[in-house]
Image 1: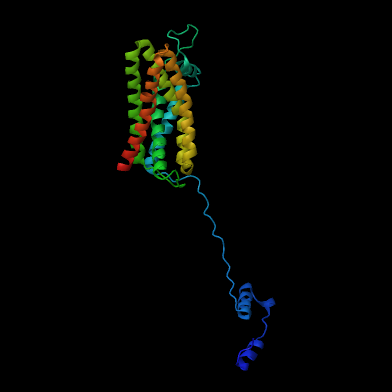
Image 2 (image 1 turned 60 degrees about the vertical axis):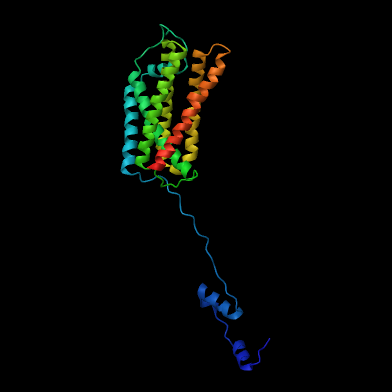
Length: 277
């Protein structure tokens, strides 16, 4: 429709058509806007930042990780490619014979078990610090997350207290309900189970330091390892102590008091102390 002013209409009709063959893309868009009165805008989809693999661990975390690796190296040196240690661990964890067989290959595994349990304490402390951090952050951790060396030390201390108290609880329970021989078998099975768990947790703890954004699946893997070895230990305890029908009620109380409640209290204590610091 033409306006009331014919001069303006003639000016609009006499606008030269732009030669788009010699124009850039932006000039073409501007010409289309002048001719049609419509404004065209282009938007680019924002690119998601690349996921970083690995983190820059601080000095405190590096020292803790280095100490954990040192324990593993000492354990490897102590092992010395001696398969008798593996046989001793299997026997301590699964065998229920009160007297050893003369054909069994015996070896003094006291220092070996000590190193394995020290490795469990440090590895469990690192895993516990990540578990507390994941719980506090809704299990969504970035690739540069660090629990902090103070929190890791707190969790390592809690893991050490858990280890000592659980060993003492098994010793007291065995002494009350059985004799010294079976009690020694039970506490040795506990040490062997903790040692084997510590070796597996060592590798998971290293992966957590490098891939903190994978905390939940790695912690689930650690939990599966713990449950499998714990079932072996519980089965041995049942075979040692509970040989009557009436003993199963005591066995259920044992499961609640010595296997489930301490884990809940340990995680609650770690959460409270880490949040307090």
